[in-house]
Amino acid sequence: MMRMKDIDFKILSELMKSSRMSDRKLAKIIGVSQPTVTRRRALLEKDFLSEYTVIPNFAKLGIELMVFHLVQWKPTCGHVDTKEFQERVNTFLSDHPNIIFIASGQGFGMSRIAVSLHKNYSEYIAFMTEFREKWGAHVAKEDSFIVSLTGDRIARYLTFKNLGDYIESFNSP
Image (cartoon, rainbow, N blue to C red; front, side, top):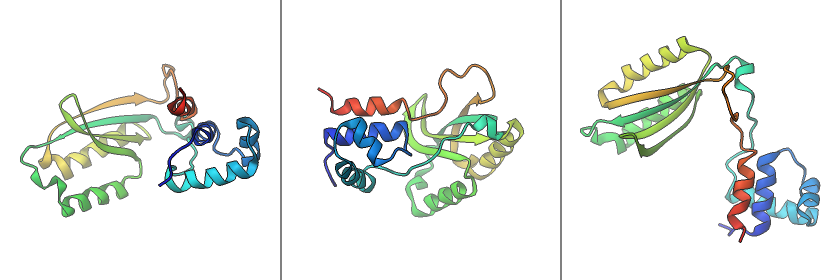
């Protein structure tokens, strides 16, 4: 795996602001040659980039809710790390492409977090009903934080554009 150089942080920062940017334009912004950008970008894609994607305006697509789910498995749920249990989780995730993130963590007495998108509150309720039916025996507690994507109180929409400047600062003195 390559070690990131200053130029790599700059390229990554610019790609996070606009992943459709050409190598020629990137080179001009950063102040290096286009072949240098092409070579470094290929290395970044190999070792550091998960994917290129589009982040739509979910509300305009008819998705009203983004939900942050917090879960704590029961202490007696020792099979959480077994292959069979992980296969059940993977099946559940493949059946629910609206789950956009899930990971272990800690906070508020919980050990898992998931983020899901839902067309409306009824779809969210159906999702939670299914979740409780399939996983309720393993869950000690769960809670959700529901965000309305159609409201007028969103201070910053989901984007990675602003994060680009933060990433670039990693290699700054």
